[in-house]
Length: 158
Image (cartoon, rainbow, N blue to C red; front, top):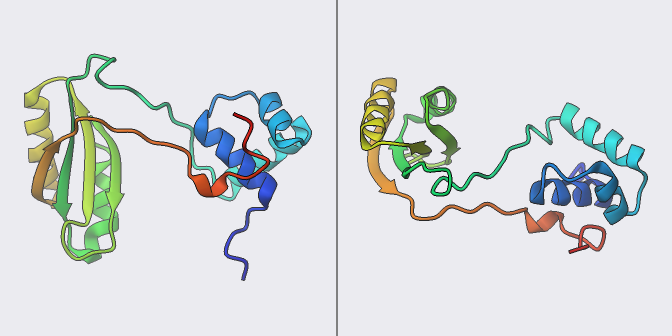
């Protein structure tokens, strides 16, 4: 079985969308050297197949006046990890949840809050949910970038 269901055009489209999810279809088409309709059709297919799950803005929380970006390193029983990771995403302030394939420290919860009390209240909620908090970290800086494995000669226009 092919390790990737994506051809070089799909990968180039994904690269451009990861770098700027609001980039115009026409700009992507020009960069990838295919028609606008090809880009639209490929994006729609990748959305239907669950390859593209959603589009997000990367927020600079400091510039937005949100003082606290923090991470809880938690442990969930392996049998409950997926459910707890899904449930914790529903809490106000949670912006990212990462599940690891380990026995301990296997759920990372990243959240943003305006006040220290919000951080404390979320910690209580997380524990009440059934996650054991191992460590808490105040995040100094957080950046996300496009996966370079999608980069190709079709994706390198800037």
